[in-house]
Length: 345
Picture 1 (tube, rainbow, N blue to C red):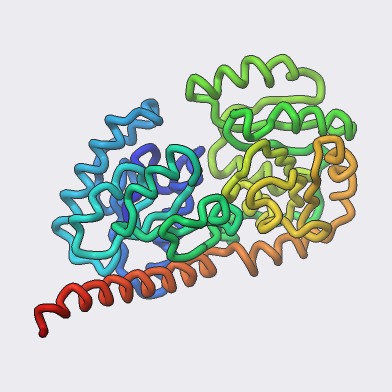
Picture 2: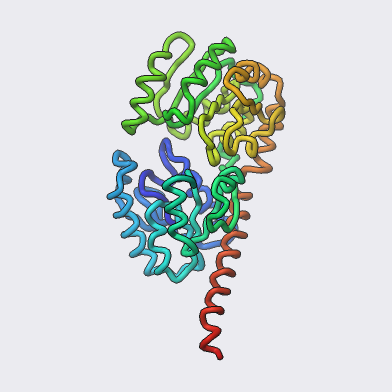
């Protein structure tokens, strides 16, 4: 399993892909598989960087160095299947002896769509939601597996505080400023926590979020795993006013794992994750969010948690990827038989 190079596995703070990769590796190991994890920093079996180059996230060179070093490790490993979560890594798939699975953690349209199409059948792609897959149905998909978390590591509280929470990456697509407006309209205090280390993130924060800070609106900075869980478990609800077709949204299942309802806009994967009227509310406009925030107090928090256990626990994700791996291995064996058939004649 090849992780991205940007954060430790699991990450100390922000890092949804890294969290998912760590959980999946652990889940597969518990099911009897031998997993070799390649990545940067701590928590991996084979390191491409001693320390993750987090401050250079988004740059091409660290990604290429990571891919080149990972490829050297892969040359020495007799794997049944290679699961690559990095961006540049799949470029080496054609020369690999084992089939390569790539989970599409982000966009599959535009330039990313062209990239995945260029890889053609050298890799098999896994969608993290049906909504994501529908955006580019012609790609070489092999399956859909929802992301998951280890629900047991998220504390459940049946008594919530009166403030609402927004947590994520400061980006216009995540709608932090809209969450503030919705909370104010509902008469609720809002706490915000998230990443703003990249230039574009800081620019968005300075322009759209900072002017709204003040009484009833508090920014906590980027929080670690322990404080994130505490916030999610105590919040009245998580407000998630997406402004793009989010392919998944890990924070939604993390909130539900704490028994905390999610109030979100109907974009991307949201209707697949949030059961409207059960684990939160899915609405079509920002103007509808304040009423949904208030209504979330009447939901059954135990049912919210139970849904997360049933649908988004690590065991479910591990089983899903087992099916994908077997499918990929069978495909590779079929292609090999077809390639050797003329020689048999």
